[in-house]
Length: 226
Image 1 (cartoon, rainbow, N blue to C red):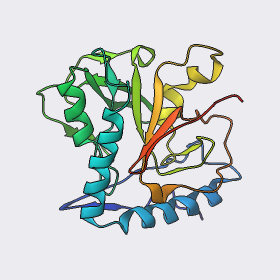
Image 2: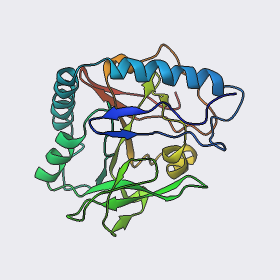
Image 3: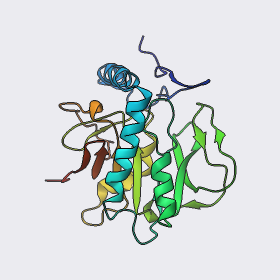
């Protein structure tokens, strides 16, 4: 039987889950292959030392600082990193220095896998049922009004196909992007370590591809639809 819960990642005294529910988009013929890919990629990420992860987070922030993404006080979205994910703390500090409102994801419906983006505030973050920290504020924003969204990435390929943790929250909230021919906001930017690259990820029909990806090596842009 294929496990329904992804492996646990350690983060100091806390342990967190990135969960793939029973009715996740991965619950199809390719679920076993993707589950094994996720195990491999989590091992790669966990094998990085704390110093390597910190160095990568600083390099990623430097690469983002050199783009135009955080100009003009544009509203952006970040994720709160857990376990061995790329630390987004430096990115958040950079955005706030440049007066960009920062929004964070918060799950609103576990059954249908829906989430919203809530403004970062002084309110204390709270951990959801999966142990993932979420913002405690109340001001939310329509996903289509965001300028840039920095997404957590477990795996990626040269075409900009993203392998997430399996629950499909980001693919659902940005599903409208699949039907647009010209206007591509918000810009979807993956955040990852170089070691998480794969030769090829077979996209599924619900996948929303990345517009760009940033690793410690720099920024990659992907040409979608061509």
